[in-house]
Image (cartoon, rainbow, N blue to C red):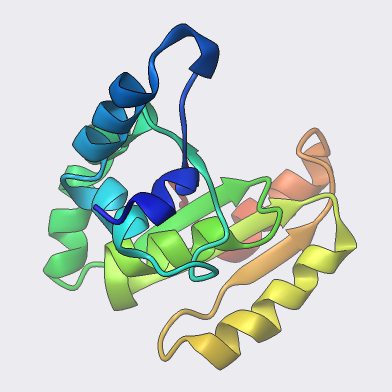
Length: 150
């Protein structure tokens, strides 16, 4: 792993582990799946950060979906709280061209991610909704317009 990208992973309670232990956790997280994508990213590629202990869970949860994606089945993903859009790029790299991404964020600037994604991707056409995750009307609208999401 390129240690310059270790900043992409966040260690829970970093003061409780040594630097070597933290790097070992990062290297283990970077050994496959989503962690590997993050570890191989060049600075500025993803603009997202994930807790290192999430990597194994992401791989466990999403491995069946990845198999479906590799077989051409659409992966219809909903992400609440998209911030800078780094996760969108991560999910796109992980799931590939079958990703159908929907994001919800309270920040209106996140709507700009749609245009950025169109410019940087050959296949992902994200849908971004602006609003609060507690807004039941918005959530019903998203469900109606986007259908079954994971």
